[in-house]
Length: 376
Image (cartoon, rainbow, N blue to C red; front, side, top):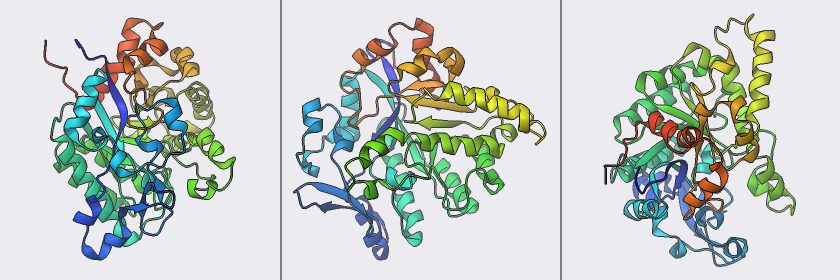
């Protein structure tokens, strides 16, 4: 590995501010994402007529704690080029000693977290514009920049068609599922063609932490002084909800080579959830025709990213070390950038070297077929 210490399994690509204005059909531009001015002088992204989302904490990597807590309005011209320019991103990765970065959306992540409504006519074109841009961004260095596309879910047929289109794009080996599809939910057997297509096409799927089904949207909580604390405290439970739907849909039982990643959902909940899944399996799964125990899916079908989770690390023997992948979460306010080497040492320094290497390099490299850096 030489001067590179790790691979980050979860980072984010900031979308260029004019991307959809330039690429959407003219009739749909007003329904797509765009940059808007806020009353406080800052900038925000807005999709259609949904509440605007300030760019502040989503572009805060590398800032001091005081800067992150300040109320200073953030404008686009303040945004570090590494968030949206591929050459600058590679330079930031070099600075942070990271060999490769797996990237998810930044502002449009709200669409996949069910935080905003998107006009049904515009939704597929909006996601396709993003998917094309991700492929183009990663083309700068496909072995170091690993892209995720966004999955439309207005129908299973639409989802499969976009997966087939994405597979023909270069440099996009993964597809992000929304925490809840537009149609029904993930436990429904209508989504079986999606699981089959992922296996056939060699695509990795993932679910990013977001809004639990029961929680009001972030824009609705913003006026409540306690609302945002509640959102940040329990937002990760959306991953638990979604994977519970996936587990009991039987997708991992029927499609043994399917890979789905929990992203930014922490890992401390996994030991209890794993043991409870086994209990439920012996009570209900066998009589429902399941052929494999959910414990078999951990580390094979089901993997998880995390930034830091001391509880999960203490229980790594229950979780299984083969399913865990460390993440920097660049460029969000919680990111370890530019001190990821120090972060890794502080959080994983007591682990056996082989386990530490799995978590910070081997598992993610194997999942996305990332070649090692050339010998110095």
